[in-house]
Length: 111
Image (cartoon, rainbow, N blue to C red; front, side, top):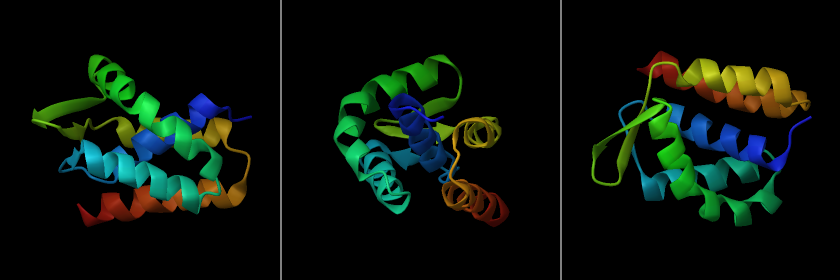
C-alpha cells in the first residue's frame, strides 16, 4: 500500500529522473503537480510545496541528486532504479505503475 509520503517520493524522483540534464526547482514543482494529476492524485498537490525544500536537501544528502547551478538539480545514476523499486513495491494500481515506468523508459531511451 502506498501512503502520502511514498507518493510524494515517487513524484519527486520520477520527475527528477525525467530530466537527466537537470531541472529547476520551479520546473520540478510543476512536474510533480502535473504527474500527480495524471496519476489521479490531485489531493496530494497541497502537500507537495511543503515538502519540496526538505526533499531536495534529503535527496542531496543521500547522494541521489546534485546541485549544479543555483536552484537547479541533476539526478544521480541510481535514481531510475530507485523509482522502479518504489513503483514495484508500493503502487497497487497497474495503470499508475505503467504511466510512471513508461515515462522512465522513454526518458532513458532519449538520453
